[in-house]
Image 1 (cartoon, rainbow, N blue to C red):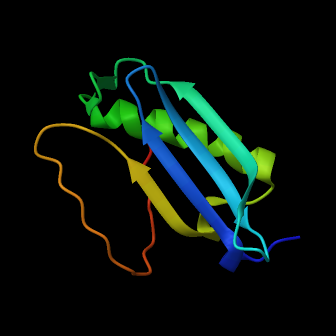
Image 2: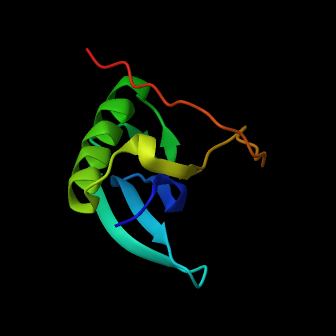
Length: 106
């Protein structure tokens, strides 16, 4: 079984689907996929850009639920979350920090 120090997550906001991958860092510094989830974006993302944030959050929550169930862990176990999203005006910034991700669902 893993400890939450070994869990990493990746999120992709694609035009056709929003995907979540959950992996475990092995002793050899490799990532072993332990869970995944993908849900159709339902027009929340258009041409790679988030066009409906409320819908995108709903779809992302569903994708996380699927991945968490397969991985037998939850989002709070993720040490690192990497998000891939494209669009005009988006810049990148890399920093180490501890954050709490909160989803406000209706």
